[in-house]
Length: 347
Image (cartoon, rainbow, N blue to C red; front, side, top):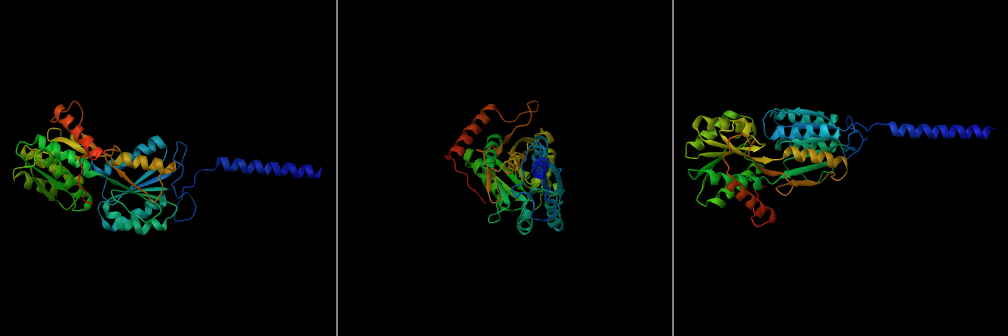
């Protein structure tokens, strides 16, 4: 009889352990500890994986930062993750604090902005169970950082080629934000694309020195327009809104960047060079969750990966780009993807 009671008790204990294991929730990895999953957890509809998005600037730029947030919002909707956005508003004093807060909150921390290059390398090793996604640059040698970089030069080649097709003066321009390698990558592609169509095309470039100052963007654009350019491409974040204002004031034209920005002013913005930051953020969150992407990897998004393209706005907007021009761009795209056209990289 005693042996039977012992067996019953043992079976009950096993059942309780199995039940407890089935009902447990994924660890939230709150704080800097050694518990949790260094690959960010299993991202599914039933998961409680938390994603912290920290941006060096601020949302509302209708471009780079907003696109990254669109990726997080889609992940919340489709993958069931929880999400939180922390903004640094271009204040260097906030970079470290906001990144630490995001690290305490999230299992996966998406870090957006070149300004974080040194900070993330200092903080990520302090949170070894968290997975960081560094957007727009590459970091090697740290096992819990996934890097995403883009072939901006490919998309800018198309933007420059199309500007050369549309220009009536043979003179175009570009306003960059801060003079850093990623913006230089935009520049070289833009210049090479323009000269691919017209070797005599003149291209003026000014760096405004800021990604958050439309006034500086407008001043830079005015200087280029007043030299004779009729179309200006911007790779300047919120500063680029000043380029649109200058184009409106002078009756000239502009090219958007990162997102399809035509809706801002479809009479001035002829098209946009799209850099699918949101897509890359969404896919990386998903792939960290399913284990197909791990810390230490460098992911590259170009034309082949649907990371780069051209946006023409909606069909009800005035269209500057003809079907013939679109066909020419498709031909150029195929040559870039195949390697027949090799676009210089400035990284």
